[in-house]
Length: 282
Length: 252
Figure 1 (cartoon, helix red, strand yellow):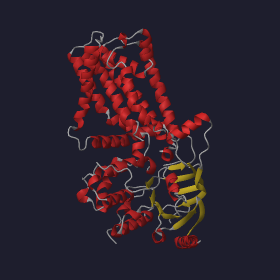
Figure 2 (cartoon, chains in turn yellow, orange):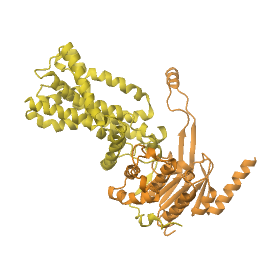
Figure 3 (cartoon, helix red, strand yellow):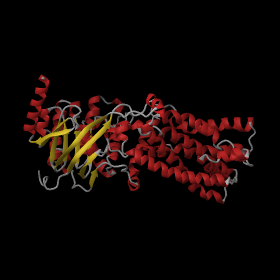
């Protein structure tokens, strides 16, 4: 026999009683509040793993929006002569890119966040919702870097105004919209891997169907109405209004706020329904 | 078994679990469903009306052939999957070790993986940190604890896994056929540790094909056969009857 068993002092009296029984749903909103430490641990795992054995590592977070910015400036400004309501094009596009690169980065990673953690889902009781939520955290650099750049440039160029104080609200809105899509996509992927094939090209299409590189004011009324149905449109409008004082389309803002609210509820309900059988269906 | 019979840690009542067999979705069936109604997929009843109780400070063994429902019992118990019918009442926290290396990330160090695992179990930071050194010692990985797991051998990964599964505090531990992955002196230490977990008030569920191990470690043993309960009783007796059953079936 070796040294005395290490676990001797353990085993406190059971604190909680749990009943496992057939259920349509079992996650509760109150549970989500306790996920904080787990979300942080998963996000830090993903961040550490992402840049291992990579020469430039985190620098890629800077290059991606920079490259898009350069491409936009050539494609939309130099070729298509897009007018941006008196704001320098580069600043206009940079503000849009902060929202877009975050949405893109999270969506790319979140979609597979549950199926890629197959062992955790199959063999542990790891709360499944923490997996897509962790991608919101681990991809924050994709938002913070272009976002801060836009804020600084806007400040230097003298665009900041009272409305900029509402920027925190815009960030919460962005998180809610991106979070809803992350939760929904990750949950559906468990049952139908089709989502993994759809998301990359849908992202490419969405980039052109969202006013990231152009303002909706350049569009015909019909196109403008159609593009307002994209939940990102109103968010981008409101975001630029807050940062640069560009007049938003109020219809688009209202539609986007409503779609975000509907999206959050829909994502939660869908996730809760699918969560019960994830270990069986993954 | 102090008070185990008075207030069982785990009570399973008429537990049933049905799985659907075959692929969940495929293009062929989708196309066929467009033309006419899709045919019902076949079902597999992994558990049929299984009831049992396990007390605190008890090591509860489960034996049975492959597909008899042993793992399913543990998965329902740990809250990984829901039962199709019946219920399990669990007092306290459950720590499942159902496969070796689960949830480990190869780019993270032993320390980081231990921390992540503890967080997944829902343990608080100070509890995890107070156990990290013990884990490194138990797994004999003190020198390698800050090395990424991809540099570990299989044996080192298994040892880390066991150390984590046995040293983090829980009220109910589940070990599913995992001791087969380690050998020799370390296996003996694991068995001693499992016994001491039960001795200090935890409930241990122990699934193994090594019947001598089951008889040596467990206080009671449950025999599952095709998802149904055959019997629950004294380890030596159940194991002997189960063994005889195996031999009889091997002959026929």
